[in-house]
Amino acid sequence: PELERLGVHESVELVFPPSELAEFLSDLPVDVAVIDDDEIDSCDAVVTLEHRDAFLELEWVHSIQAGVDRFPFEEFEERGVLLTNSTGIHDRWVGETVASYLLAFARRLHRHVANQQERRWERPEWDDGFTLPGTTACVVGTGTLGSGVAEVLGSLGVRITGVRRSGDPVEGFEEVYASEDLLEAVADADFVIVTIPLTEATHHMFDAEVFDAMADDAYLVNVGRGPVVDEPALIDALETDSLAGAALDVFETEPLPEESPLWEMEEVIVSPHCAAFSEDYYRAVGDLVRENVDRAERGESFHNRVV
Ligand code: NAD
Image (cartoon, rainbow, N blue to C red; front, side):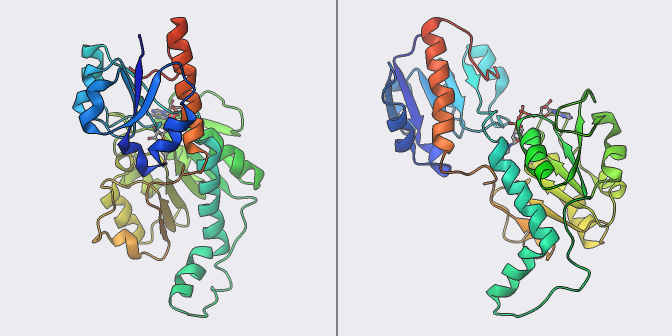
């Protein structure tokens, strides 16, 4: 595409200040400006968090997230609008977040923090604490997130197994199962970690049957997308002690509604869809955008193209 003006849509401010990205990209050979909804039509391309119908008039839309389930792919295709995403940058950030959930469960940090809020001096039961070496994490999805999680947890001595559609081996994973063998894959894991995108095939992939197949003392971690997990079935499994706990960054409804029982469960860690937040986020997105502006100049096909 011929690019003259690139807008940084104000919706990115949920993740970083739009002006930081615009400034970072100010040396590009195209005009870069922070824009609101009224200025979309002044651009050929936008960098954005949210979708707007007005984007369908543009040449190119770049999502600052890896997950692009909110964008209407067919309409992009029909209108000939390019869509690119930000996969490839979140490995270490999300990997460290997942490691911090696991360390919290093992070393009981979430309980200490909860007790501290109440000024309560309360030691865990003698057999509540454990250590990570020798535990097994089954990472479902072996892409950027899954590999980052495998790397960080592997360095803490956790044995890593994985699930991907083909079941073919992946570096960093001791054993890889095919998606159709999910029940077998989760059965001997202490932690099941969801790092897959939301698609028609993955919607409610984690349901009562999967929670039944997991050990009663296993934990579920979801850093993929909320609807990949059947949330009422998860709540049921947690309430009936057929799972030990869960760390959840994403939910079927976000923000998580105030009345959700997940807020108050002792063995549940809730984070507000921020597993990948980092002060470096805008630079990593900026590098992806710069790469594709360069490619556009050279007439090459785009990196991370989704549509
Ligand atoms: P990626 O494309 O690198 O990896 C996704 C992996 O999932 C791929 O290997 C793909 O083959 C696999 N996959 C897809 N469908 C599958 C299925 N049915 N069964 C098994 N595997 C399947 O993407 P990524 O950068 O790793 O991001 C993955 C998802 O994580 C994103 O789509 C997004 O929804 C989510 N995400 C969340 C956060 C957060 O802040 N919580 C941050 C980044 C990404």
